[in-house]
Image (cartoon, rainbow, N blue to C red; front, side):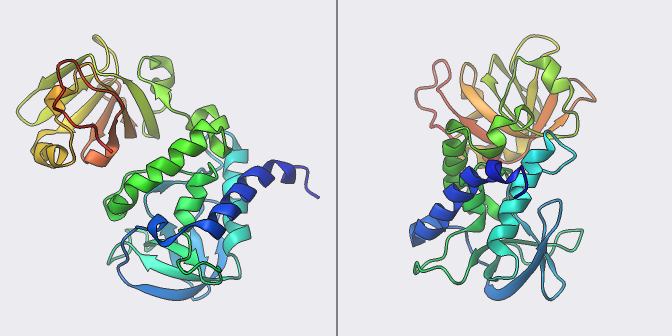
Length: 277
């Protein structure tokens, strides 16, 4: 047996149990049509190659790859996907009408040979095993709530990639760590010190000059309000943001969708502001 195999057993077992036990309520992602397909292989990047030659990507997930963090995190995720999918028939559910710019289907999928009436979501099972992070994407928007809950549980239990510092939640005050993540997807958490509004941008500052800032596109303000996030009320609130770091003009992350913000506590004097997802 490969000496790494024992390290795969805990996430494999957790995910297998979830796959066997999820109910219809646990698979709420919308379907833009479903079809049966056979999985041929899983690439190093976690992409899923089908027997007919098409390639699918699990939308709304950040799956580790060997070039980031501990290569073992990527090995575990690929081993899990391969063990569950390769050579088996899946119910492929497209989450977008078109492929992405690399020709990949944006999808979720489930095994067709599960005993439950409603097969489990592979994406949800992967998150529950701690082998992926939620990466907000429009295509997977309606999956967000249940996926974040699965991610939270895996993180609290220290499963899979949550033992790898690279994939963990970074404190907004850890500027040295954030400087190393330029151009990379990150999850950052902290207390908003100040909210500043400009003509086309709103700034959520997590500290004084030179600190981390989340930059929100002002034209999207109504979408944030509909999601229960009043940007002006976030001063003093503890929030978690996720997206790509951009260090060209300071430590920044651009926020364009409400799903990129989780409000963890109320801001000062913001009793009427509802928490986000």
